[in-house]
Length: 342
Image 1 (cartoon, one colour):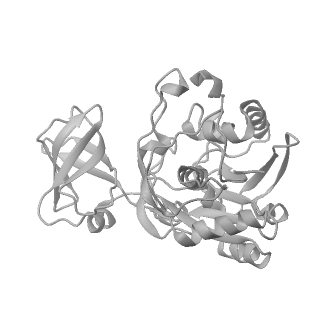
Image 2: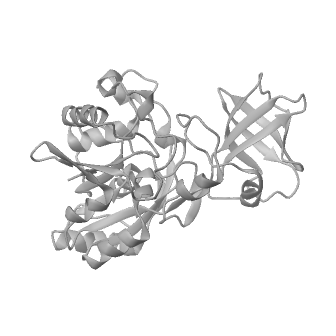
Image 3: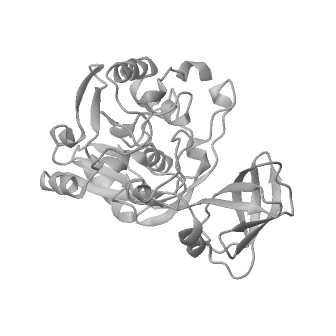
């Protein structure tokens, strides 16, 4: 397939720059795959479409304040985005780098008043940095780091983002972007779902650059995803298996949850528990082994996330739904509205 097949035109006015005034107030577009029809509701109405015995699976990763703004010895501004690993105290940290002028190997960058990093390697906007002294990486990020809002949000991060760019499921530090489908859930809605007999379990996929790195090749088959760390707990694997046995539906909250579940499938349609790295790239035609439905946001043109949803829905039907969403002025991307696919 060609990358151009996953393109569409979006007015910039529909790119959400801020979250909704209250969490959970987003709109919800429901796509029925069998009938190729859609409905327009509010997110809280999701209760009307989930059944007792269904299982929601969420991603409990937590977004790190992984964006650092510093200055070179010459005074030029440098911005880096840390690419987290499972070791919070590595001597050298992988980063994305951009700055005023060329950032060269060996230069020193000052962050805040007393934190210094030395560029060890740099090429094509990627590199490695070592921090001086006994710097604890996580403590440093909490002191001087910024929430790494996506580049299509044309503003600096604010204290509001520390709360609203995290899901209420967020427990495990390690992501550089939010699993945005989960941003719509509130504690009262979760309780209502549980009261209705709907199960809720979590996996962990620490979102790195693989999730949102642009596709730079013309043929989709040639794109390669960067690896990301996932963990499927035994309890979640067991609940998926039991849900399948009682013919309930597995509803993934987000594309990252989908990739995690589909990376560890069992032959019977369940999932294996365990930890590991995934570089799974889901695009049409792909046969889903685990999930039966998906809650997701609206995604960028030509993105791997749009391709994943196309594999589940069908590209033509999805593009029709996106045109409808644009006509009805849905809010797009991370802080935008949601879609439920059944």
